[in-house]
Image (cartoon, rainbow, N blue to C red; front, side, top):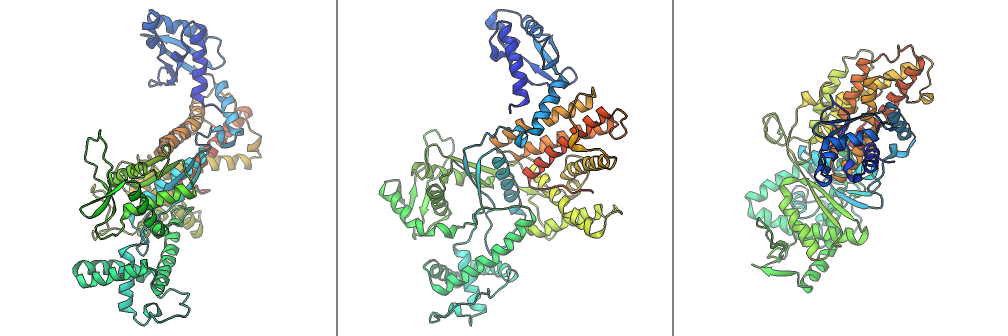
Length: 588
């Protein structure tokens, strides 16, 4: 289904051609002066020089051709050569009817035939999720959903940090605390216990303590590195312990991501590609891509037109150890071999831009990806407190994600509990749903690359540009539709029609912009476009609601048309919040 603006442009292009001008001059935009018109075309001014005519004359001739148009109720020329346009309500009503009957409201699926991997999440095992993990999870999940809606095949990968010294630190500290465990007995050849010898709480206490200790005690760090070496070289007991660490950590991570309504298709980690690193390194050496520099193995990725310094991409350190670069390149190699995506999107803190520039250049130079494979770095800004600095606890530490979500939930529960008609259970369930909307919309309504202030009071407000405001709007529609049914009306038998109501027409135009918004959000990898569209839609809906008698409308045909418009608006809003990763309650 064509976008509304494209259909409008086609009509004006045809009029330009009929008037004897180049049809491409007929491109239409949304008016920047809604007090004068709904849409405008500035093509007459662009064509004035070519056709040696005053732009007002060209605009007048085109307006004359549009007098009998089935699309426009008004087409007038205005000095110095604008073409001001208003569409017919009949045209809008027909468009919305087609939208309502089409799959995905007629979205053209610009991503069809494309395969995309989105790398987001990126938590380290054995460590709790903190607020720094929030943006990657929320933004990545929304991008995944938008790309799927646009017709692409999309695979989301969490890419766990599950290898390296952090594992050795935990294992060594466990060996000090629980030396009697069979995992540390090299003579043991029986079955290891199925249950982990620690809880997630113990793990989360062990890692920061061991990490801090290793920074102060060289001998301790040496032992941890030895444990890391044994793990990476397949010592049976250490591998079994590592399996327990992964299992316990992933179980806890799943619980936290479930609460955020974030789902990963793949739970791959750095460990998954360790086996292919030696072969990849050998290939880079053999083909002449990698060379030694100060004892390390590097690939030069500098370009002649670089305006800033881009250091070489290090593949192995001077002691032969692999780095994050190595793991990320091996992961790209594996993804290309096993999945062969057309595009790889990395949703990561924007401060890592230079790092990913090195990795991407190295992947291209060493031919790990095809020339046409897109590698996209989507860097996000920081989530800050009201003081404008990165969000911290009152004590100044990094806040655990579950504590933050709990704070928002309690704030929302307090507000929702004021509705005395709700049971305690319904209030709790509703508060969970609405709190998630507050957190997600508060994040996603900002352009990903920008920092933003996390303000619980503002995000949980039912006024202004918030997720709670959107849900209140949707609940308002649900309430009207339910009352209509209680009066004996059948919403499925209503049809959008012409009513002559100006605020209804504004709402119709807002709903009709859904397809264009989806295309933009997909092409620009921009969830904030969905938020902006929804906010405008909610405002149009609320303006219509306050200006119009709906359920008390005496003209049954008009009432039916209003109900049909509300029902379609609700369906579109439900689709939008699904793309943002949250849902709406039945009442608030």
